[in-house]
Image (cartoon, helix red, strand yellow):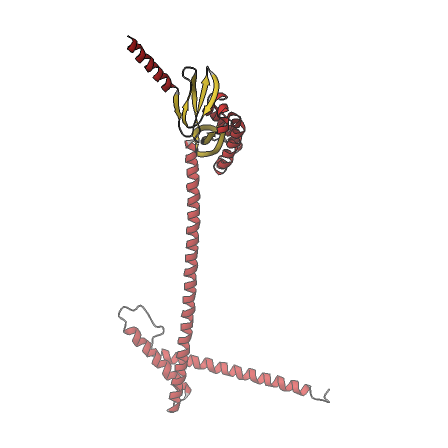
Length: 319
């Protein structure tokens, strides 16, 4: 009987000792109370407490934590939008007591402040400004949270607006607007490309016409040079200029008729095409040259008479 009591006492003592030993993990703080009253804060490592009298009231996580808050609000242009705000916060080691005893639910407190700030800032902005100034919203949330949560031992590390989700109808409208803008830009680029193409074609055509005109001028110059040489050759064998011109015109006339006749499917008709056509053409040309020469001689004589009269009027002593 005595040995049984001894074993029982030993077991009780063992459990009492074991219950007085506890460990605290890294980046964690333990709150120890004695008879319900705060006793101490224990950091990471192996610790002892008095069994029965002392107890661990709770543990505080000292790591950086993140809380995601989804807020629905309305913009200045009456568009309902959902914002997801991520708040990264941490309990400061110097204020573990305040973080444990002053605040019952830190996540609920942070959520309330996020709702308050977002619904105060977003209604001042249009939807496009919400997308462009999301960093301003995040900074406003961080400033407000730091001022409010610092007294409770919580340090706000960073706040981020991670998602902005307008109403589905608004998103469809925005997509249609963006598509229209892209189509407009594409049409402008296509129009510019077409204009460049037209300008290039016009320049090429102008250059072609210039070269064609230059070729025709060179051709006619060579024809005139050839005719001049032909007349000179015929003059050397005793044929005068008039007879040489008649011979050349008649020869070219029949050469042309022969060229037209050699084409089986030709639609070209040479007018006039009678045998006497070359002679009549030459006689008309000679008559025109003769009349032109007579007119030129008469005008030359008139100019000489005017110059002679002007010299006579200008002689000294004549009144």
